[in-house]
Amino acid sequence: MQYEGAKKEAVGIVGAFTRLIVNCIIILGVSSALAGISYLSMNSMPEFADGRLGTGEITLEEAQAFSYPVWIDARSSTEYAEEHLQGAILLNEDAWSELLPGFLVVWREQDVVVYCNSMNCNAARAIARRLRSELEVPDVHVLQGGWQTIKESDLPLEKGR
Amino acid sequence: MKTAFSTLVLVLRILVAGVFIFSAILKLTDQAGFLDDVQGFGVLPYDQAYLVALVLPWLELLCGLAVLTWRYSAAASLLMIGMNGGFIYFIRHALQQGREIDCGCFGTWVVFQNHDHHLIFLWVLMVALAMVFVRTFMMAQYDD
Image 1 (cartoon, rainbow over the protein chains, first blue to last red):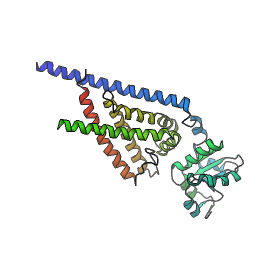
Image 2: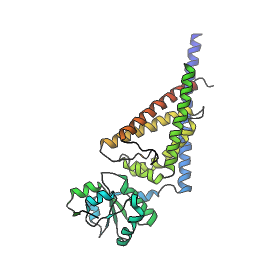
Image 3: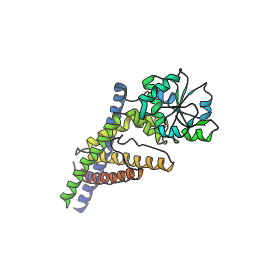
C-alpha cells in the first residue's frame, strides 16, 4: 500500500514537471510567434540593419576621420553650458523641437556624431535614432565613451551656449 | 491556514500579472526605446539586444495573462522568475560598471528614487513570484 502510494506520488511529480516544461515551451513559442508577427506587420521595431550601420558606436579616431562632421551634444542644457566640444550643437530630447532648427541650419548631409555624458548612456542613441527615423539622416554615429572620451582627448572645448 | 495561503497566492498572482502586463504594454508602445535601454546595459551585443527587445515584451505580456490561468500559472511564474532574475543581474552588472542605465521596465510611469529602491522592488517581486510558483506547482501535481 505504501509502495503504491509513493509510486503514485512520484508519477504525479514527474507528470507535473513534464507539464511545467511543456507549458513553458508553449508560452515561449507563442511569445516568439507574436514577436515575429509584430515585427513583420507593425513596424514597431527599427530596422535591424539601422542599428548596425547607423546607431552603432564609433571610436574618437573613427569620428575624426570624417570630413567636417556635425557634432551633437545630447546632454542637458546645463551640462552643455558648463562645457562642451567646440562647435558641437546641443540637441536633446527635452527640447527637441526647439533645438532641432539649430542642427538643420548646419547639417549639409555630412556625417553626424552624437555624444552624451557617460560610458554608455541612452540619450545619444535616442537622438541618433530620431535623426534617422524622423529626418532620414543616413550617417549618424554614437561616440564610444561619450563626453568622457572627449574630455580625455586634446580636442578643443568651450563653455556657454 | 491553508485557505489563507491560497488566498494570499491568488492575490499575488493578480498583482504580479498586473506588474508584468503593465510593463509589457509600456515596452510594446516604444520598442525602439526599449532597444536603447537594453543596449544601455552594455552586456549584450547588438544582435542579441535586438532579439531581447523584440521578444521580451511579448513574453512579459503572455506570462502576465497566463499566470492568471490555472493551467499555465506555474510555467508563467517560472518564466517570470527567470526574467526578473535577469533584470536584477543586468541592473547590478551595469551599476557595478558605473553605467547610467534605465532598465526601461516601466518607462516614465514609475520612477524609482534610486537604483537601490528599484532592486528592492525586484527582490520583493521575486519573493512573490516564488510563492506563486511553489503553490501552483504543488497543486499541479494533483492534476490528472
